[in-house]
Length: 125
Image (cartoon, rainbow, N blue to C red; front, side, top):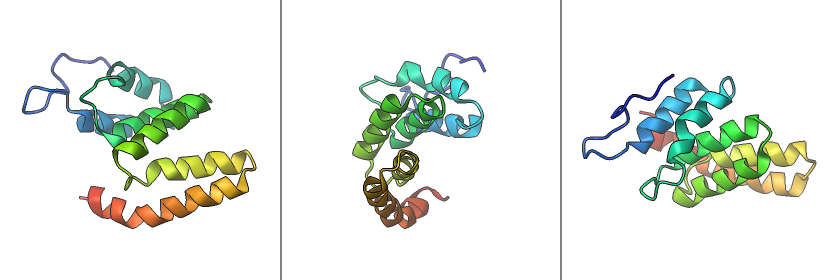
């Protein structure tokens, strides 16, 4: 997968971070975390990047590679940008369960369930 100049430009001529997130979703960070990181990492620190899904998918790819601290930082950034995004809460729940942090896991599960309906309504088009 090679980046083509202008491939992810929106109508206004700026990078379309939602389109990048959509491409990361199509690549699938579970199956191809390295490809997702290669696609998204160059745009990680762009000051105009306010895509919660972008940071979620990048975090998910890092998580798959066992880079938990980076993943958690990216999940938190995703949540900060859009607190209705339930996806990072679910991954934080799973991570907490795997570490035996049951109380923390239950908080993340509650946050996930609280936001899931709104998130689905927002993004299921």
